[in-house]
Image (cartoon, rainbow, N blue to C red; front, side, top):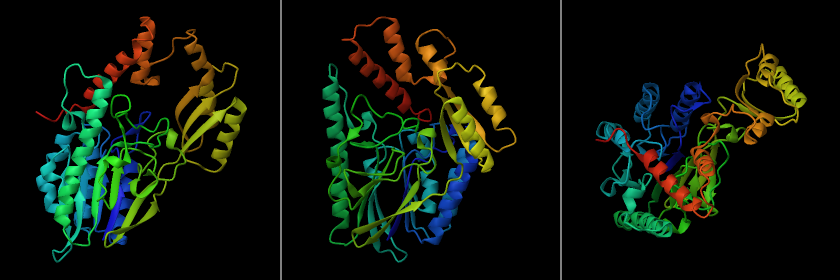
Length: 405
């Protein structure tokens, strides 16, 4: 039994205004080739298939074309779970049609649809899959008036644990005495997980509700395929509880990071995990330093014939108002593209309120709210509770499903 674990495709995502469909196409073609060449039996896509709840037609075409190609391959099953960026109803809408391709879709918490028994070509059970998607607050916690943040955290943690342990018990009953693996899925932020600045990972819950302890998952899982974090990593040091990470760098914070698909080969219930490097389809480069250092790095990249997309951060003390013009001139005649410029000297002036050139694109929602609290001179003692309430409202908006009735 051979499994491929991938997640966090974020189809339709752009990078500072630059579309990335060529990268997505190249990745999906590469992935399909790997599945065909390595005789993969089961593919798990652990959430955040799309970048938004209303994906573009082109993003949808990539998704469905890929599933059709895999449906014609020797891969027996594809399991797709929803992530926090996905619309549950959008993913679920075609699931009856996709079942004809042996694609099992779980867009949201659905205990009746989360247990899947995978069978080989002659009908013998090969694995039991607990296909659990991103668990929203409303799926696992009943809200009560007057609850404190600590009460909410405790109820959410218990609801999460109870959901997984219930499906785990059902999976053990389905396996019986068979020597086959139980494979779990999830889309969450495990405690101790690593993120990077500018990696596009959206906060999931209020305060520290998003940090799920490894003990919340049932011990019967022989492998746990997780999504949400874009950096490949283990959970609590376990080789069998894994994040595969995103297939392409979602922001300059991931520039230079080796992306992976995980191959899990089962002998009975025992998994062997192999990391398969994903080719770099579009290099990203971060350049930081004084003006002469920036020019020298651009010169070297140009000499190498690089086609990288660039984030340039000027850290010098002198004000360089024509920084963009200078660096654009420096890359003329090359395939380099400048996607973002950070002029640290100008940013410092903005923070000192001597410049009004700042835009909302430069700020995260939490930054805007913090500025609002400061502007209205809200006492420090009130800010934590207000910030928690704001974060909860923001989470509700992010989880709204525009495709639902």
